[in-house]
Image 1 (cartoon, rainbow, N blue to C red):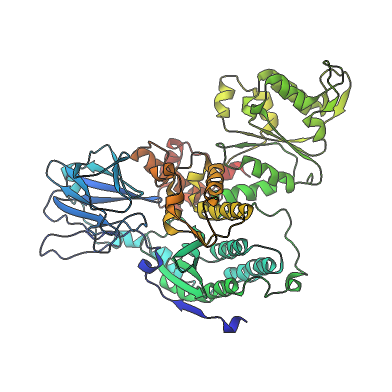
Image 2: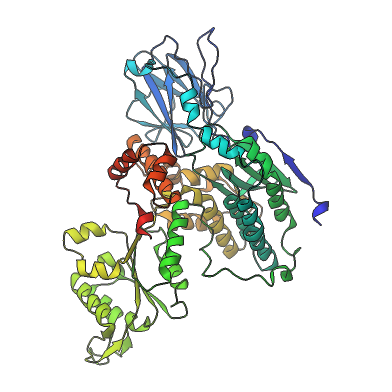
Length: 625
């Protein structure tokens, strides 16, 4: 019974939640009051600031001016430079700033301090062009022109404040629950959760549905669901929005516990937290109820929404959600689709979704990797062979014949030889195919969905790929982002893959530790989703019932990068990646309206166009229409 369950709601401090943005408290000269701007307190005064430390926090780059003296780096509240991460010790390292340079010394931290991958074992000079890691937190030292440390035009705060008034006014107007939130919660979220209780759904999948539903319904910054295992907290669901609009404070967190489960939600302002606290409590109660307490007849009469479900786990990335939303519309027709993206980004998954959402869903979906075969073998697979074409060869249909009336997915089509491209073009034009060695055609009316990880524009320019074939297979071109540009999905993907892998080996771990989650969220993932899936399959072999997946079980290569970087990325690349991610999200949120996206980002439209050109950002929302 719900009424017998212990449900506790508390207004939790950010430190307890572990969700507060990194906060630095920097010492001032004696006698100088300590101002606070929500991010840091700096000791500028009359001193010149020849150096500055840049720290990467997710999508934000923080710059901390350094004056002469000793600066303690750590996660403790009294650290001079606070980095609130699980991999950063309370007193992690010390920076010694002199007139001519900066030295760094590790203070016996748990996860160490490294300069360009080399551990710091004694006080060492910190070069300007080298990356320094405090645990997994990435930083870099830069020098300043003396004039950059002096105030040229002072601000009284009113100008900056005015740019945030609209956000707070909007939040104030939502002090009572808006009808759209209640409708989504009542008519979308609740039925889906109840259906998971009436069906054979694992507890992990059910909590994923509850977490994703709360995140989508509520006007919040982040949602986290964890379980108290006795040995620590296991994070089961985690999602966080980008902070383009809400970067002026730590937010207002709510924590609701029901038995061993804890639901944490951070809202941008206090009045939103108060207004939506009952819905957060409802989510916690649903988790505590568990499967079996609601009979299947509760949802027996519910009509399923049209079209296939999105792939599991549900994505919280606005870019990916926009792609799948457009794919659902595109699927209704018969136009061809070209999916671009790095290896392991889920191109085949999107192709299967398009087929399942199309009128051809009951017809065959046939797939072929064009890069895995030589030219002759590829043509035999595509077009089929007739008996007697070679000694001992029996007749068999090719993939075009097999897919007649359905969908043919050609993966890595950019690797195909020009001669084969010409033959495919003819099949698509005539809707019939000749088997190798045969003079009579076979029907082959198919919808072609193709994919490539190559630069198709470069292939067209140098003539490696035929332009006439491109126009046949690329009525709709879409590009899937790499995992490093959809980091908000990493926690739920990790839980999904780990749960599946543990089911295969017959173990029931408690979950993923916060330290391990921090490493997963900050790794570079050059192999994208496929690499994450394989890593979860590997670590599952080392877990026992009730264990937490700890960071010590993860491969060492995952610790080398943070933020959204590839190996050996410079700080300039980090900054560009952060800017690119923010612009792409704003464009998706604005449905391709550049003027609206520019207003959202608080920059001019011409500036946004210029940055999009510089960062080679294509307006996919317009292309998806």
